[in-house]
Length: 168
Image (cartoon, rainbow, N blue to C red; front, side, top):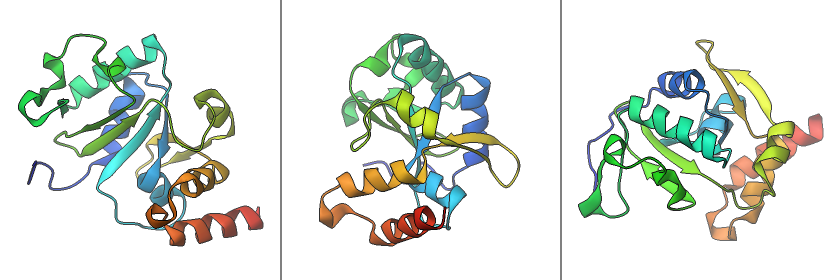
């Protein structure tokens, strides 16, 4: 169990590194909801990355710059810089730690058909300090929530997303 690795999240720094490395991503999850709707408690930054060889290489570069760590098991946990190129193809979801914050990387997302379609419908935004990001649309956030088992859904987010979609 990893305890005390991250004391705060520097979302701006994480986004800046992904942007500088040219990673094609969409923010999903709590940070996307937080930046676009309401403050929510979240413990990581969730990225859905375009699942192409070139983009996964750029993502690996960004994760090295962030000094991220990952391992398929606790005993294999180590800096991502120590993994051979192409390690992001090993599985569909990665939960990583890094000094600026924990990250989850998704190569596919339940409830959404494909990255390209969601990218076309995504929303460009800026953090409070001006860092550019792209996040999935409200409609896609709602699809993600509704694809979860009822006990895993965040009903407050569902209501807020339905309200936002109704008002648009």
